Length: 208
Image 1 (cartoon, one colour):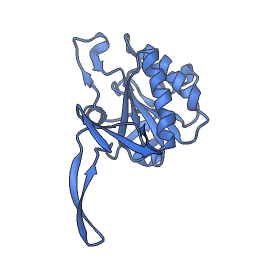
Image 2 (spheres, one colour; image 1 turned 135 degrees about the vertical axis):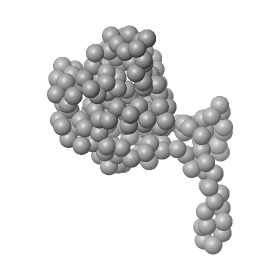
Image 3 (cartoon, helix red, strand yellow; image 1 turned 60 degrees about the horizontal axis):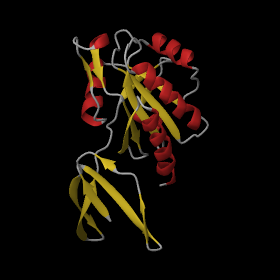
Image 4 (cartoon, one colour; image 1 turned 30 degrees about the vertical axis):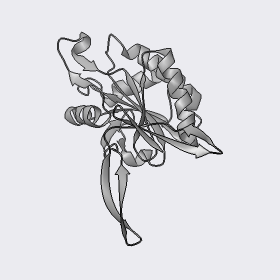
C-alpha cells in the first residue's frame, strides 16, 4: 500500500496482519507506462540523484559510480562557515563513527565555496575532524554544478548570498539517499534529535 502525504510517498508492507512502515520517497513521482509480458502497465518512478563528477580531498574524481549499491548521506557546507557548519560537522561525526566500519554506507559533503575550498583545504579540514579513508568524502568542483545538484536534486539551499554570514546561504539538512539514488530522508543536521533520527533510519534503509 502506498500513501501520498504532502508530496512524500510512504510505502507500507503487510506482514502477518501488521503494517511495517518503510522510509518515504521524496520528490514528485512520475507515472510511466511500460509493457510487461505483452501487457501495458503503469509504474511509479521516483526522482533520482543524477550522474555527477566532483573532486575530493585527495584530488581524485568522485562520481555516482563510487556510490553504486551504497546508502549514503549528503550535505552542503563550506570550510569558513561561521554559523551552522561546525555544528553540522560535529553531528555528522556521530554518524561517521556509528557507520564507518559498514561498507554499505558512505557520506558525501559538498563545499559551496569551491574557490576557497580546494582539495588541499578540504584535506586539512577532514584531517582536523579525524576523518580518514573513503567512507566520508569532501568534494569540490564547478560552482554552478554544485548549486544545481543541491537545489534541484537534493532539494536543499546552496547559493551565494552576500547578505548572509560568510557570504553563502545553505541548508542544514542531512539527506539520506538509497542504493537506487532515491532520496529517502531529510534531517536537521544542526540538532542532536535530527542526527539520532538519521542514524535510526539508516539502519531501517539498510534492511530494505
